[in-house]
Image 1 (cartoon, one colour):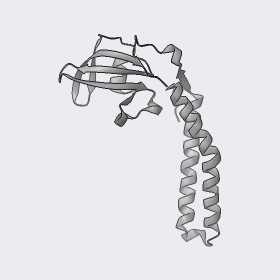
Image 2: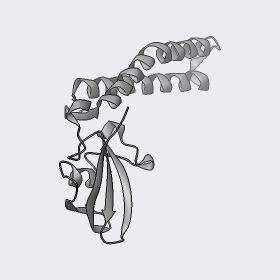
Image 3: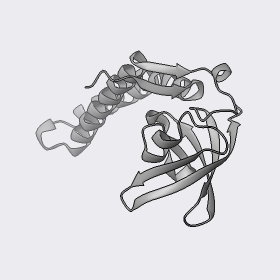
Length: 161
């Protein structure tokens, strides 16, 4: 796995720590119990409950390692470092699409926190990269699969926790 730095908001870092704690304690015990019960059914070679539990165990252990790597390589953007003057992780940005004359709002987060369906975009996404570090009134061009899109930054708000 890559040792690339992972940008996170304080909230995103906290969520990863909470997920890690849950997986290492409750979820591990739950999966171990499922494996034990499935073993008691007898022949494990044709035991789908056992196979399912072992697959879940592998997934949980993989996710634990993934989270540990993210935490170990995390660069946390502190709330006090975020302002409403420049686009940064932890800001919500109102953009004016200069081509379609539509307005859209995004919250910029680290890639581990991205949730495009809820308008949380990563600093590594095309739009995120283009607007990062810019201020109100700046115009940016974003390369998208559908072609170039031109935006003007209308407002920047620091996300409240």
